[in-house]
Image (tube, rainbow, N blue to C red; front, side, top):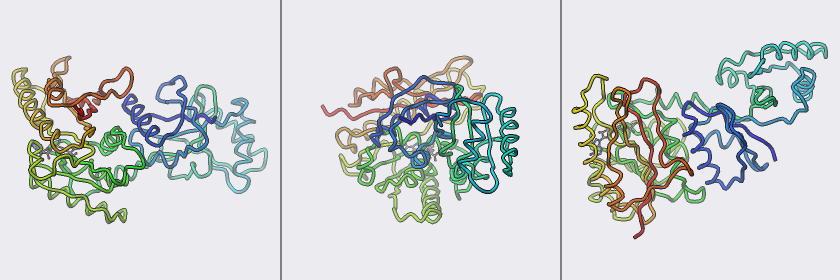
Length: 381
Ligand SMILES: C[S@@+](CC[C@H](N)C(=O)[O-])C[C@H]1O[C@@H](n2cnc3c(N)ncnc32)[C@H](O)[C@@H]1O
């Protein structure tokens, strides 16, 4: 079975959970091999298409495949490139241990074969994309003493277009990164066959980050709501923009509502999945007192409790919620919003992401607000 390595984003544990969720959705059979730094190694059957999966995932930087070459010598790699690119100029890059030295030796060998050759220093994935090295199968990575070839690279330009190029953004309330928004959707584990029918909702849609990712992923029954008229207007503008950009004809339904009161607009038991980053409190500056933070967490606890009361009504039996609960940095600790026991009482159960992970914590260095991602299911009882 071919071995693939997934280069994980800056929150590797979240990238891993997303990969497993998506592979399971598409019923891809895989075997997990030992980890190595930023890579997740999987043995996957031949039916796996890295190009298809990189377009779905939000947290994977690239997918590379083990070439199963007998060794790491310059002759072996030069032979590979010589046969893979039989005519014209060979553009290639190598990253990993001793890559530069190896690249120079490979280049020399190829020149001895009378080939025109250029070594491209792989500064980042953009360099590989711009030089088309995925298509020519000549972006090489040395990991674990094996030679890997890049099969697919994250469409970073599309993400940054949706992040910075869209008409309306939400800097004030702190925007959710589009890659994380996509991960949240993928963590909901909606089976491939159902993706066109399921109803998904973001009831704190802000400027629509999650909704745009859902639209881009191909969901067709998308709902979004927010308590702010400005947010609703921004979301609508952003959706129209993406639809034009990508020639999408699906029209999400966007409406003004408090997340605590969704049942007044949406029919009972009508939604399959709620995927949301809720209101996370007032932005922090870093010098807030503990009592201030405690008051904020208490307010959020009330908001989230009422919100789940409403979710309970509009979700179908077995409906799923992907929900972000913030944690606030205070000195060396994180203060959390203690609302899970209430949420369970309302009628939800936690679905762990793996044997050892009940939730997934997302925080970048220096951030004052961390995000803990939870997956919950409406209890049928
Ligand atoms: C953290 S933002 C969501 C950002 C969004 N995920 C994005 O990246 O575009 C929170 C949003 O919650 C909205 N909000 C606050 N209280 C609400 C409530 N009770 N019901 C619905 N929306 C609410 C705010 O108007 C704001 O747009």
